[in-house]
Length: 162
Image 1 (cartoon, rainbow, N blue to C red):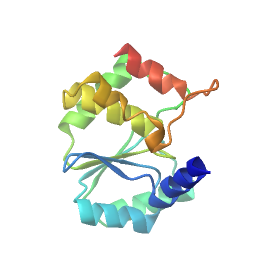
Image 2 (cartoon, rainbow, N blue to C red):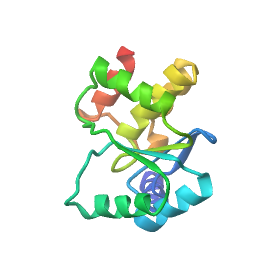
Image 3 (tube, rainbow, N blue to C red):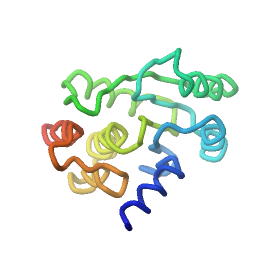
Image 4 (cartoon, rainbow, N blue to C red):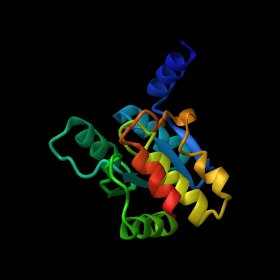
């Protein structure tokens, strides 16, 4: 019952969390008003969309409306939560996290798996935090649970390779 309550909270909150205050935030797919709120309240200057470009989908159209109304830099970087990242993808993500205007908001659909991996990579390779601190970004706290043969274990395998 507690797990269901937590999952409900994550859904309602947009699974929005601070990774590194003033530098990196993570979330699920936010609706237009949630996204505008985060841009305004956290000064977001770059959004990294891990779902990729989807111009025919309502969520993408709404996201682009929110971005166009601001001066926010928008990057589409498609990842699959069921596939391990290549070395090149990791290098490209690190360059984005290091060089994009900050603060950065990284998001995927649920804010648990792809966003978790990118946040963990940031913590380990950009912020130079410990492996344990970085690995905590891929945890149940954010809705990530790669057990029982879940395809999202690819995110954990990617992190373990780094």
